Length: 373
Image 1 (cartoon, one colour):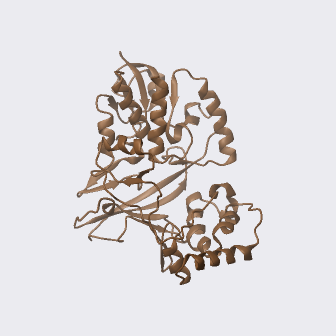
Image 2 (tube, helix red, strand yellow):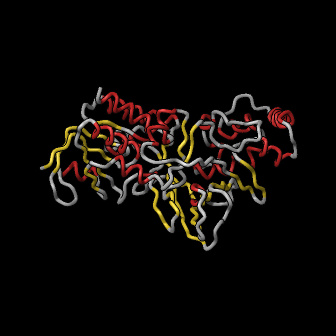
Image 3 (cartoon, rainbow, N blue to C red):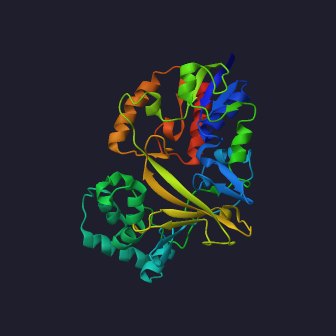
């Protein structure tokens, strides 16, 4: 039997950062993952010289210089700036909502004109206390922006009409009254040159990594899929926290995403890395053209259409549905988890929280600081 200081369940970003830091401190680490590859949802796979974001677009962005420098020790990042566009019928708009969006929508030029137009539409609606997401969005941006750029996309994203979604999902919608298509306000952003998988490979160097391995089967038998016996002192679990506790307080809800990826015999399909399709009658939410993340000049291109869907067992969960009902259930699991002396829960699924990548890294480093204080 081989004994480890830590068993890390999940070879995604949280698990990789924790493993790297634990090994730096002389700890032995076994990393397992249900999938047949490392890097979780940030997994990138090279095809025809193009780094394909297999589980959807991942743009690293942060305002935390320490996190930026931390990630740059594993890869060099390019200067990619996320500037998505939105297609609504035959119309095309810049995102996020900014003066380019408003100029195209209303034929205006100045911030004062845009503000007046939005204020006029909001006043006509006379919504004082928004009761759902639709009313919340209308009270923030008015009718035109909501109908063309929010309504259909949001319904596809969440799988239900906007007037059936809680208002707090859209607490605020940033309106920029400048001609700036940079989606993020963060000081640092980019894509690792050569993709994300190489970063996780470097983080996990020195760990024993076993793929296509289910944690619950290992916990029951004490044996890996190859029959070897292993043991560990502490567990870092980045899977679904409700699954860990056998859904004793009831299941948590998640949303999932399905991808249709295809190679096209042209060098440039849509002219941008990210194009959102905001109309409800288009079944997918967006199309990703992967080569544009790294300014590719390959003779062919690869695109992925993204379809949002309700999560079902056996399907990969992508992000939690953080409404009041689910948060109340999660609070029970979190209380139970706080009593665990030898288990650490982390990541989107382990902490039932939507995390950007920089926040995942920060959360993992915070756990490391506490664990090795």
